[in-house]
Length: 220
Image (tube, rainbow, N blue to C red; front, side):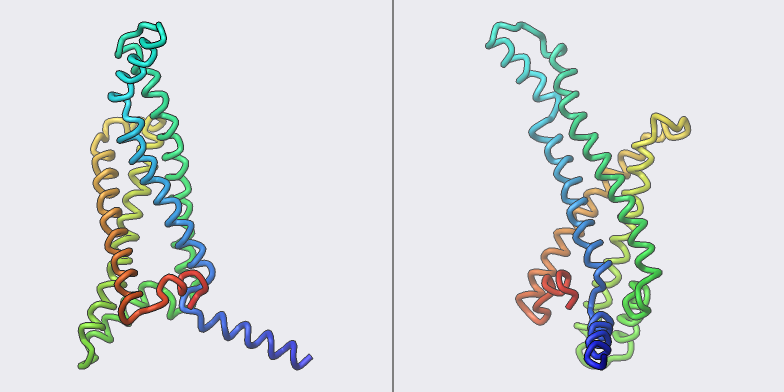
């Protein structure tokens, strides 16, 4: 019985000392997959399945096989192919919205010192009070703040994406043409954050913060 109690206490203590909780790690990788898939659909539709390019290609290929149609007649086919990918993009958008709600819930259920707001405050306090290693303290504060900005961008992406998805069903949204512009611009900002984040991970692994990736896999 004592051995079982010791094992349980050791397991509880191990979970408490984890740098990242299991819920946060699962959310991180699911969110990364959904965003990557969403960006991939945009890339495919803007290159391989670009309707204006494929309409001419479809007409030419059919012409080679004895079926004569104009480029205008081929456009519905080209757009239908593109719409298939946009449908997948929409479903990924719903998944991203669900993950965003999950992230908010995780923030409430995380232990106090794991909450993002608390981490930002702690990093700011350390920067203001610490006299040595101020560069490291400043960098830590900037990193934590950048995560908060990322969540703001994610919120804008989710809200505008849902508005675009339901625009045909809600009359008030039909004339809000700026929603697409905001959605696309936010996508570029998120893409920029991803590049900066990946660069930071690579630099961290090569310098003083080794094990960044493994920490997000096994908890640290």
